[in-house]
Image (cartoon, rainbow, N blue to C red; front, side):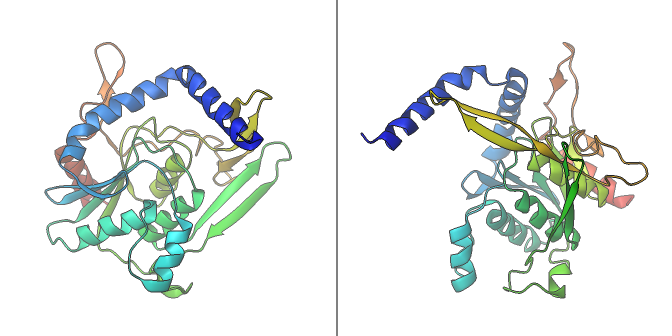
Amino acid sequence: MDGGAELLDRIQAANEDMKPYSPPEKTFISFQLKEQRKKLLSEATTIGTDAYYTISGDTAVYTFDSFNQDVEAWKAYMADRKELPDDAIGNLFEALEMASSDPSIKNIVIDLTTNEGGYLGIAGFIYSLITGESLVSEQLNTITGEVSKGSAICDINLDGKFDDADHAKLYDLNFGVLTSACTFSSGNYLPVVLKDAGVAILGERSGGGVCNLVQAATADGIIITTSGNTKMVMGYGEPGYDELKVEGGAEPDIGLTSEGPDGATDYSKIYDLKLISEGMNSFYASA
């Protein structure tokens, strides 16, 4: 065995040894949510690897757990237009096409309850797809106090051009986002910015997570992941700036959790499609 392969095996073994020491609270909540979600997914159409589409009445739910992207598959799609990639955006387009072709569907809810984030650009694309606007993100260097801003300019209609047509509303649907305490990092950032844009948030307050991640390895192969010195903010330096605007998570417009008799959060209704549909219709009726 060569040195590189041996080191990789040692790192993987060390990571397995560390799994029992994962933070217990969110791990347990994630387990609860996935157990509750089994009934929802048992009635769902699978539209990709770990991506699902469920309907009830006038509401569809698109479920996925990672902001992943397949760059090579997108290059192939833009060249031949044959098959959408099996990633977060490709599967979302599949779900939106299914919803828009069904005259009974008027709402679509993006389920991020166990989504722990990933590539921030996915959040920017989904934001633009829903709102028709480019997402301007802000990152604060907590050491220097400097703020950098970036604008996500996206080819929303997938025509290979960046132009005004990308600001058109492609789907005549009401959008919502389903969140929980396990909705983390980029998964948390998306509902925070969408709530500011007037999109319905359902479920439980999202779980925060605003800093970039930094990884290092010890001499014996243990991978350490920690928060870095830059974090996502909104409206930094402006009147009324709230440093917890992103870290504090998105407060739901339609709450679907409650406190159980033991003081723990009761998640038994968070995937109730009837309540989700009612919440969406009530929110947009008064919007």
